[in-house]
Image (cartoon, rainbow, N blue to C red; front, top):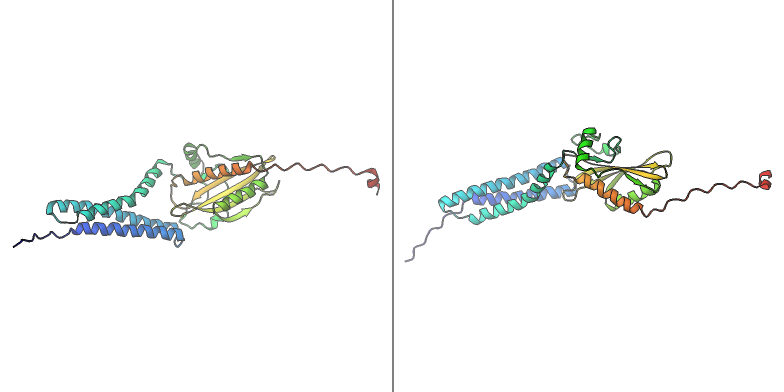
Length: 276
């Protein structure tokens, strides 16, 4: 007669740790889908994403507790606990990297090339909710933080006329698939050119706001840019990178713009024509 050794029942903690982490993965993916589809505003999406990450942390803690129970009782479920910890760490890895990067950067979400007179948000002001960041620039304190963190951000000076630079910038905006909400071409000696657009972040497609101003400086153009996050007090450096890359591309594109020839002076009328 062979004796059957009764197997210990699986640890309930190990089972629940795996369930929690799998459920957290589903919640995180749901938050990403909702954000990319634009079904909800940023705040509910962030809350949903935070809940999913919190479930991952809880699942890892339960798995660690399951290890202790398995060690003392000899219950099965070691593999479930290990898989829960591994999947939980995978889910938390990128958010943890972003969090570490965030705290190294200054607490600003509004970047501009002109702190004294930043491009204004006009049409965009109507799109922001009460829970969003204010459309008014934060002032000299934010300017000092920006200068220390991103000293290379400054206005772009071009030799091309404002009208040509405006058209080139509009092409770049459309190429980046930013949604234009306000576009006003410049008029020589009368008004500045202006573009307002909404840009999307790469993964979660959160909405950031962008404003461009084109001002005639002699025969050339000064381009000022502003990029702001609608929510939160830190931006992972996304707005500074957006301003830097856009102005670099615009500088390259404007290098191919040929300056317009000066208007020819009117020829004086002949005496015979004047008498007529």
